[in-house]
Length: 113
Image (tube, rainbow, N blue to C red; front, side):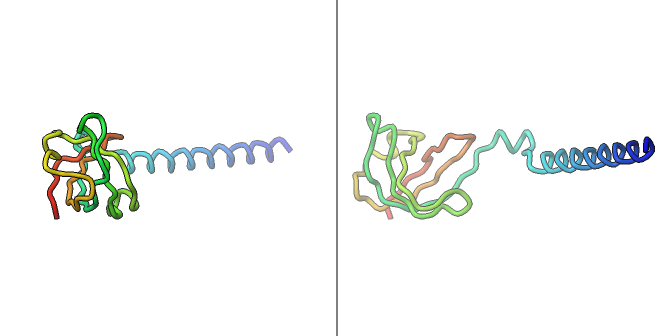
């Protein structure tokens, strides 16, 4: 009976070691490299200006789906430079470039379409 307990214990430990190894491998594969983490990702999108907030530092845009990022929605975005939106008003159709780094979403380019 002692031998059976040892066999079960050894099997359980081996299984845990395999699971831990798999988990570490998946984490390593999913983790970005230091250089990739420092760079922001950019996305091209189109939408309609809904309005402005915070004295023109934030633009609210209703946009279509942004491939690889989000579904269609209306969302406020920080403007890299509030001067980007000086010639825009609510209702304007726009093309914009969205820069995403960590949880910061910033419009870096904005043109009428």
